[in-house]
Image: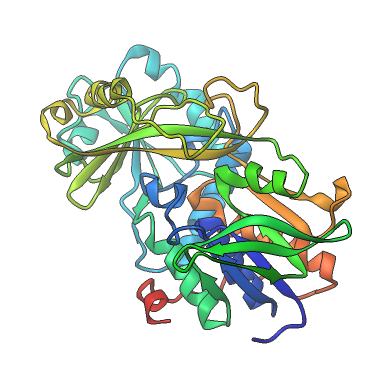
Length: 388
């Protein structure tokens, strides 16, 4: 592989995959390690929403702007990866209707196109919706397979020389003095331990980022926030359905092939591996989702699972709803630990942007002036990852 510098990326989710892609395009040697199979963590467990950002326009406008900008970029660089079915924000009550004007103003400020639909027009588009709805707002949401987009990043990174090592867990950070110089890893297929040397290590482990940071003696303000999602049999809507109110529990239904996914609840944990699927949360998803689509209550449950969001925020957070969905990058040289960079927060839709910001920091540290190209380079198909 080309490049005088070697970067070790820890984490094989969407962010790590996008990082491997960006780093290789800038001429760096890259090794990515993931303790299980790639996308096995939070990335492989989300509902597959290509965010318009409309969900966050009033509570988290920075995240909303990130989402809509990346929405347009991803459509360009990953053709045929998404179902561009749009989304509806549905007002069910008079109280929901009072949210309409501030919602439209917030979308306009964030650059998110909207179209207000009458009750009759909405029901023609989505006849399974609650017939007592008042109105709806159409936005450019979409859906995607949770795993295929990261695999496209990984396939393209491999094509440019990146080495991807799944089932390889970091067990310690390797130092030379106060400089991070790589990581000690365990190959779970052979149980062999060895050290990977690197000029820079990037911690892109999502909700596990705090654990990796602690190995290096630093702290990051991350709060793992799980949520339960429920998939019921039957495609009950063709567009993404949201409740027109501040983001809350059970207020989004995402169509995925022949399933409908309802989400999500929110709480906080210390250990992102400690994920329960409380039966009460499953029932709550069904009950709240049925307010939007009444027939949802009659459909068989195909699966219920939990995923931990890697939210940026203090450990004093109670539910996770109060925490931003934006992202933040940390160069731990500011804390006296050179050679380690951590990226936390964000969403699957913003992984490319997270990688761009992080790679900019890494290149500045290494004196590399190559510009980011990931806004234009079209990704290889996801099947190319398995072709090697």
